[in-house]
Length: 88
Image (cartoon, rainbow, N blue to C red; front, side):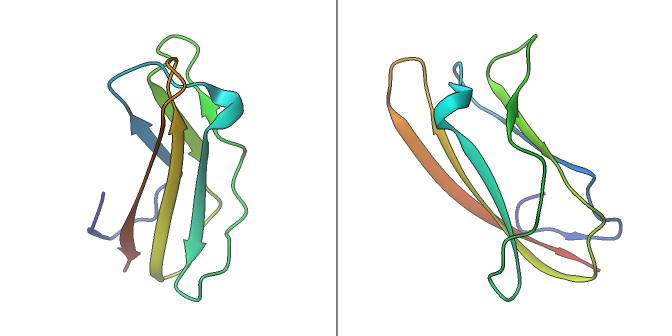
């Protein structure tokens, strides 16, 4: 999805990491092209695989979006990143 132009807006944003993610200290934030936060569900860590974190996304309009994430691993190290996508 990163850098992609999507014909259909995503219903979820799912991130997969190399190690277990601590839900309490981790987050995913979605913003629109104007930099305003889009209301999503709270980020949750998958119960079956603690290396997967996701949010449910409301219906998105056409436009550019940014995803910013923070993930804290079981070792306490904080990692962060971001990517963009466009809904056509």
